[in-house]
Amino acid sequence: MSSALRLKLENIVKEYPGCRANDGIDLRVEAGEIHALLGENGAGKSTLMKVIYGVVQPDEGRMFWNGHEVRVNSPAQARSMGIGMVFQHFSLFETLTVAENIALSLPPFEARDRKKLDQRIREVSDRYGMTLDPRRYVSTLSVGERQRVEIIRCLIQESTLLILDEPTSVLTPQEVASLFATLRQLAKEGCSILFISHKLEEVRSLCHNATVLRQGRVSGDCRPSEVSATDIARLMVGDDTPISTRVTAAEPGEVMLSVQNLEWQSQDPFGTSLRQVSLELRRGEIVGIAGVAGNGQDELLKALSGETRVDGGSITLEGKGLEKLGPDQRRGMGVAIVPEERLGRGAVPKMTLADNALLTASGQGLVQRGMIRFERVREFSREVIRRFGVRCTGETSTAGSLSGGNLQKYIIGREALQNPRLLVASHPTWGVDVGSAVAIHEALVKLRDEGAAIVLISEDLDELYQLCNRIGALCAGRLSPLAPTRELDIEQLGQWMAGEFDSAEANHAAA
Image (cartoon, rainbow, N blue to C red; front, top):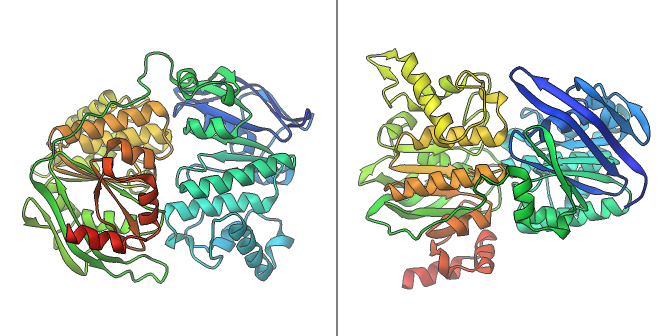
């Protein structure tokens, strides 16, 4: 690190109605420093980054950039100063291509030559192991691929301060290693990096220094490499919050869900088709589905939820066929869904939490004889908030006003309180803090122990190994065999994620 001070914040205050998101925060980042900003969901991290990036204006406090006091009035001004940011919730236009989205953040003279920009995108994406087609529309990209667009956009901008908000949440271990090598090289060249993450071991291996926030204030500073992940977690959540999940062994019962030879042909030339997908899931069992983003995870979730009708094969729940049933009918049979996209598919941002509960839980006595029971809706929503520790101002809060982790806890709680027989959860702890992750894991284990069958789609391999009875992997729309977790080593799972499971299928069939 250089001794030159790149960024300095003094007494930053930002207040929203009913919430003091930042309460007198000080922060120093030197040139060439990789500085972690840590804290629970709702601790004020994203708000502070938006202040630096010019998305919001602080109510109080001062900001210094390269030794000079500045006021950043817009992201465009921040980019012109050399500040780039990757948001946790992507800031991409779905109807534009990858190149068109990146062009929007570049000066006109750089954005005008599209052929040159396409070539630059290919070079940067290939160099850092995040291959992208500049001509693909964002609407056709998986969540992991959209994250790549955000990261590559900042790399192309050649920022001297790079702000990364949960950049590794949807990357494979190999992609994380490649990204970290890139970040270390950028730091050596003098670029400062503000790194927001809930993956504390990543922070310990990557970051020079860390500032920890709790309830909008700085609760401590540390050098991550010199303290344990437990010490950091305690700075984040205090002494009263559990920071690990105890998962007891499960004793699965009879077959609950049976999927046989599932076929679905994508009409999108960039989409992923499902090919001969088969699995069985038992009562009181959690089955994990691993895989690199964009290999059919979302298509499988839609096939199980009823959002898409399959072209072939069968889906049965307790012996009853689901293939021809829509989402509402499947919900009526006890199917619950937690999609990977919280805002848009999991919840409507501008609607209140109570109204969002009504969208999927109307069958829980919230509607009677065609009439909405508004007080019952509010009671149900308050129960979700209370039981799952959702930090908000109440059931009248809009979904979009919650932090990512708190909204995820609400969505999980909304589905869990419906006592589903089958729960399909996709990336349930993506981008959430350690305390929220523990709460979500405990909810899944409790549902399992109550007899529910759970399909857990996740790119967090630690999560899969911790919670699941059996694990398989999706690659190019094909599903590997499902192996008992205790018998499946990480190397074998990695091979399955790369599509190398033909011999495993033969051995599985022989067995």
